[in-house]
Amino acid sequence: MSSRVFRATAVLAATVLLSGGCAERRVRVTSEPPGARVWLNDQDIGRTPTEARFTFYGSYDLRVEKGGFEPYQAERVAHAPLHEFPGPDLAAAAYPGRIKHVVRWHVDLEPTPESALDPARAREELIDRAASLRERIRTGTASE
Image (cartoon, rainbow, N blue to C red; front, side, top):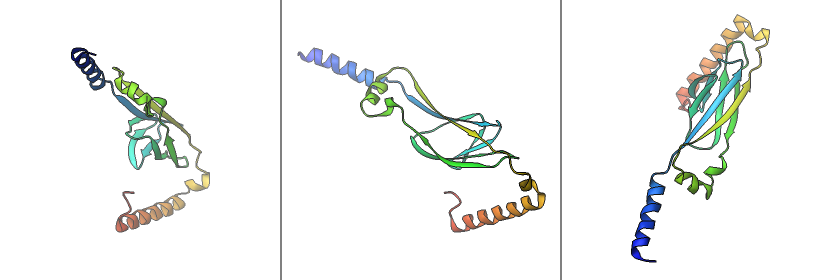
């Protein structure tokens, strides 16, 4: 192969790789009923239905709360699509357009039992939560 053809091929390959599109990763959280507040790894991302960008696939702590409903808290996993695995990721990087992957999570909230709506009990639970938060701040674990 002549050096001219080699240089042209190298320039073309570099152009394709450097001008490739980008991947956009988003998580979409919905709930029944809608309008619940959502936290992803203790970061408020809005009210359902809501979307937020994320960087890494893997485990996330999801918390969803709405007045009159039991709070929902669980670990959810954002699974990587095929184009994120070694091999296909090279073709995806060379693709000139934008690749958008949306992870969808839905939460069905359970109504709070009537006994939990008792004002005296609610006050007691609020005081307990405040004491717990105060202790977490004191020990430096509030940001975990």
